[in-house]
Length: 174
Image (cartoon, rainbow, N blue to C red; front, side, top):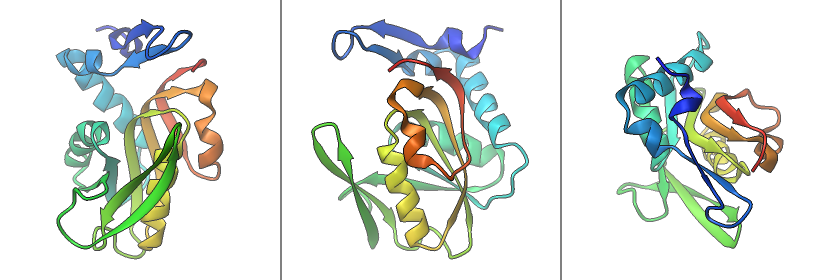
């Protein structure tokens, strides 16, 4: 079996010159790559005690749901504004050019629940920082944040300092 990193396709100069885009779809389209990615992320969670997995659309769903299923936990989706049908709470966050808003159902997290956040990639950390605020607003406690990949050069961990953050693969650049 290949190493997890070997399943990630690197595309130079996308979306702009000097950037190396790390393509998660190449991991997903290979059965062994998908299995290895889920297994690697579960291993990073380890034996920590938690109640629910939270993941943002769309790739947080791809990795979060099988992890929640395998670990016999619930999965809580975080979506872009206007996509969830029941009463929600929302958190705005900064993008490179403007802002965006994430929402979570108001009854998704019970006070005192321990939460693991799962996503495919940490870049600047803004999305996950917004999710942490949503979880904590509902009284949840983020006990672990797990990514498939980290772009260390964008320093997203700085926004998540004080939280237990791990990535299956770390790329030093952007």
